[in-house]
Image 1 (tube, rainbow, N blue to C red):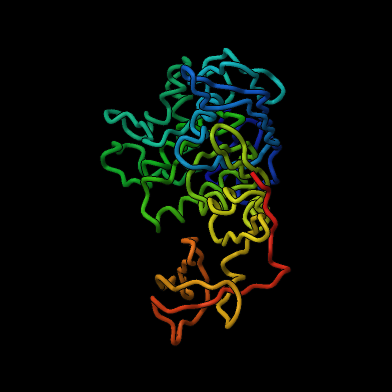
Image 2 (image 1 turned 90 degrees about the vertical axis):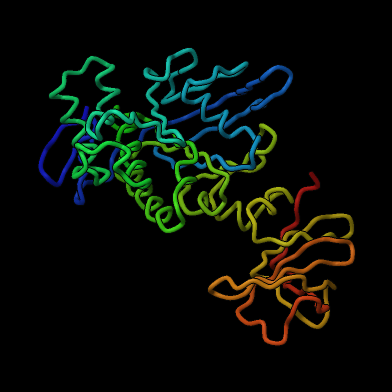
Length: 344
């Protein structure tokens, strides 16, 4: 339950949220066991086994059609698995309607009611639960304070910016005190500057609330910035999961290395090796390739190259003196920076 305390503190359930608050008790253990979802003959999710520890910020990452959004909808109760079980805090939630699962979902479109003001949008789910007007408005105000939108109570959604609408949608999802917040590509509609600000807000909320966040994205940069746990999916299955540093620096397959970006894939004696682009440099002997493009990145230059077989590579370096597209070059790196990849 959400109640007011002082102008600088909010209580969510039994957790005091303030600049001086202790770390909240973590909750939101999520377990998927053998979860499959079929649409006709096609498996959107295929025998998925995943455990997300309490209070984890998990990003489901992958290309379009990999099954990440279907997985989120299965967690939310908007899809029913063909097989398998889903547990939240050690209780099966299969068959429960979305409102009784202990989860809350923030949709990509925000789905705010255009005819309701900010306060009533946030309080709407409490109204549907039969909570009286005074209490639901009090709880909605507290949650709007948490997302720093208390000054906009009487505005309609059309009177808000995209970032402000997103904060209202967050407050509406969190007002029910869920154990897990489910986010469907929440940053995709924002400009790059605002996206960075909202990322910081999501991290702050996650830290203060102590609940699990499950965030679907196709952006590896977003996942690297936000997640404690990245689950990279491919064709309905998990290709690799782990901490962001592990997936980026120690990819197990060529798919992971290419999707996470920043790696060159080199073939040697029938095996694939990944070398980070920032650990690759141009030298006088090594892998022969031609420069096909140069881009300024702000902190240096990204040099795109292609070899005689059509394989593409990239090198990041601070200067490009004497380099131009069309020139022959050689890629070199230290053996210590090689990562041997699985054959798959």
